[in-house]
Length: 224
Image (cartoon, rainbow, N blue to C red; front, side, top):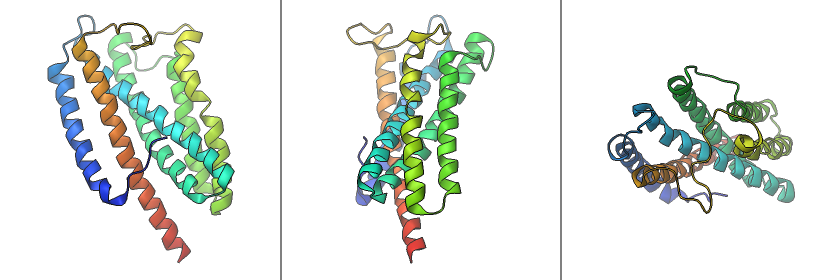
């Protein structure tokens, strides 16, 4: 689970996120070579994959924090889960939007009921329901308990998404990086992809930590 930075480190983390985003965009457009088959539209691949990675990381954090709350009944875990779920939903939305744009260029349609696309949409709906549940239930302990159960159950869809291209026939491209196999892309593309994943991970930690601080402040105001 991604650790939450202390308050004094947050501004520096925000500046680092901004700097890494600038470098990442530069790499996407000027460092990575144009794809010989898909052309310029393939550049959507880098933020698309990075967004998907961070969404999975965010929901794994929700999963772990939800277990943490059910075991300890400490509301700090519920706060981490809530903040991570909001940011995860944001990155899942980005994954879907970028995937639709890429699909339009590659498949001729914005949406196909492909197993991986459909399972990502289900994930988006599950965590939208998670946030709706948090809004509906006002009592903190009850909200944390119900949300933790849903956060654990909803995470089941994450491995389904990952293995969907193995389990079913799909139009979605296969795995880009596989253990023990050489990546089927030039080094510049791989470096851009990995830097994008690192960039979006730092951005996730920054946004989740900021949201967590706000949730804690709101809880303190209500307790007064």
